[in-house]
Image (cartoon, rainbow, N blue to C red; front, side, top):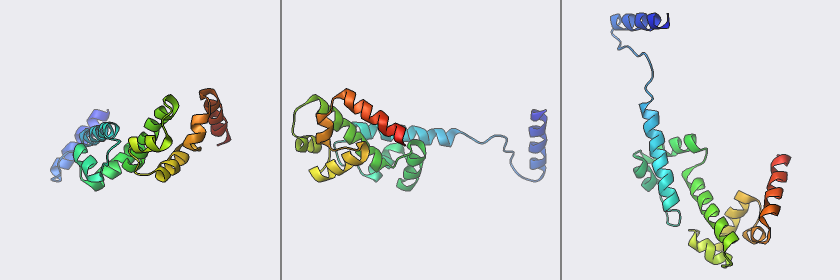
Length: 151
């Protein structure tokens, strides 16, 4: 029955001089998603370097404005926020697994200065890098569960 309705709609559209549009194409959305995945890979690989919106948009094959909209739609974050979060997660591993100074870790993961790193780390995780380093993994997990329950 539905096929008959689509055929009728196509015939009426053709008589009115319109091209039949039976089903919206998913190709543009798939291409956009593939471009975002390419940009995500570029961010993961180059997170210690300065990445611009234009460079990431070129990797994705889009204009910067369109890339920004599509990236936010697909990930829920802006490219800059995703880059910062990636840097913080790289710093987590270094803080947990090494005794290197926090300043050195901040510079190694791509932050330009310690103040910016501490501010971003605190915004993303709710504590300072020093406090994170002083907690055990079990304490950290318990604190996160309590924080999630309070929200």
